[in-house]
Image (cartoon, rainbow over all chains, first blue to last red; front, side):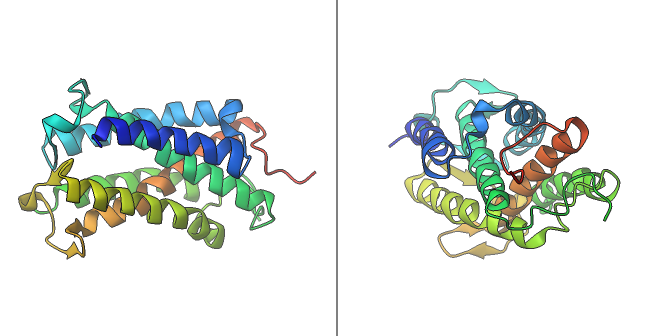
Length: 108
Length: 109
């Protein structure tokens, strides 16, 4: 399986976690997309350093070859899946009563 | 050179710290929830990383790593990556919530 296929499956798995398994339905919410838009900007910067300086190197046969700020486009899918699974779990835990408080912005 | 990758992680960690200290997103303060939220991500994505290293999808420049290699040829930096970057994402998410007050689905009913 190439990185391209693995990354696509990773996104599908993350969407399944959010919509079907934990049912947090974050991808239907504005707060997710605004947060992700901020996160992805910083991903492009830091991942650009990791790939541009060739700290991480990719087998050209395992990627499409389309690159954004040095990084293979597959890395965007990898990052999307990682952030969605993390935030879905975070919200799910809060919904289950695990440290919903102290909420963001509260000084207590 | 050895500290290239660690420096990127330090930049991410330090660059988001102000959200906790000044915006009071209270993510590190909710450390039990944070650790529980990171656990599935660390397990799943370390497994992906190990499989990708074994399959030759990607590799790391040893000259730019501190040199601590975990089983499966996993650089220490990669394990740290799966702790630091998801934490940054949660900090960003909670910062958006703190500023805009949009619902995320975990509010008490």
